[in-house]
Length: 239
Length: 239
DNA sequence: CGTCAGGTTGACGCGGGTCAAAATGAGTGG
DNA sequence: CCACTCATTTTGACCCGCGTCAACCTGACG
Figure 1 (tube, rainbow over the protein chains, first blue to last red):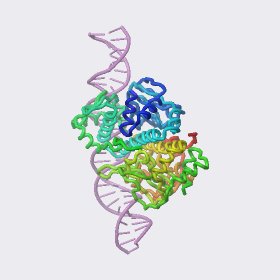
Figure 2: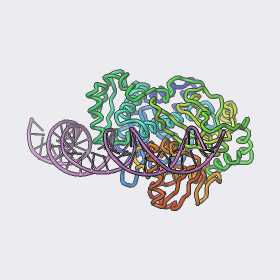
Figure 3: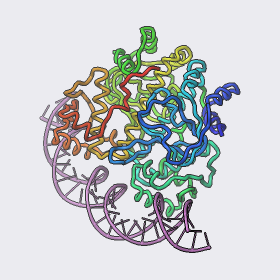
Figure 4: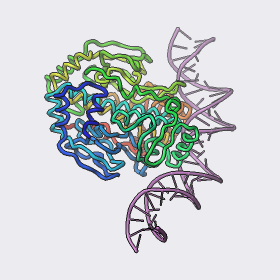
């Protein structure tokens, strides 16, 4: 399943066989974690990063009254908290939303990589910058898009990202998120998400039910959200 | 004025004299740009990054109807688009909001740095991860904070960041932003920003007028926003 | 002293929040 | 195989924060 991580990297940059080996050697062990497990807590000193191999995870921050904002979704192949290597302590929580398989990557191995492999370092630096680009797109959604557009944009983003690792096709993808989870991504209430889900279904754009997203009209969905995949950087460039 | 950049780095990590020299040598030239100049356009292939030495800049994205979302503010000492080194093309615009002094840092010098100076590479990697942390905090604001809390949070963040480079004290700071600019940071309309500015003044928390932010009650402002500076990473850690 | 960007204010409307209740449905144990 | 449970989804009625629209004010600058 670590091939999903390689696939994700290769979608953006070439990797030599030697580099692939170096990447594979980053993982010390794999583990499974239950749904709703916090794998990295805000403020905690970290000694390793978490590579998501299977399942869904998210980053979130919350306010004192319990309101929660998910700042990014993670799909298989993603590093959930590679930025923890330089930040040491996270400004947010990382939580499994479904049962997950994760790879543990000790920070001393990442550090050795930065000392010995400048090109791979640049590739992983890129990877955290891609997370930032996703954050920016979400800021645009949260600040300026309507509720319908926000959900459409999220569905389009997940479709692209899951396709990269072979977990989506043109018909749709499996997505084990509750409407509460979606509301925490979108800056809405779960009640309103329910209305928006219905509207997208009635507009024959997409059907979202617990467990599965079915895409009826992807161009229409993209047009509604004004979605372009530029911010996901799918055209490989040299590093 | 490049000392502001050094000050910003040293607030988070130690720098040896040799490292300081290496950092200084990154700048090929300095320039001035007028207010409202776009110094890096979305999608454009970049060959250098822009170090902000004086003035205010921002990153923004927009929708087809002209609605704009500023995703981050830049203060003197910040790299405005260091992430452009790995991304090659930006997913957003970078614009001067006031007349600015900038340093031009060619990407081949950054690349040389990543080949020869692993520790400085980690420090600059950290720097772009700090941008991402700011993006996440803004996602929290845009998704979950009320209009009043959002403005309070922004004023608190700028106070901390400007203090680091000696451009703010406990009384307040100069800030040449229009209410339109603020509205584009906060995901609000300029009309509503005007009302919020009045409310913060009437609550004797802060006075915001064109050119100057005066802080009357910083603890009150921070409490309103539930602001903590954790996400700005002011406690130095080793890299 | 004219011009024009930006700031200010008021009236009104709407998107999305709140509250409450009922329906659904995936386990779980008997 | 059924009864029970509890989280989640769904729906309706009502409300409010913020947007919209429009008019007027202010002040910097030529």
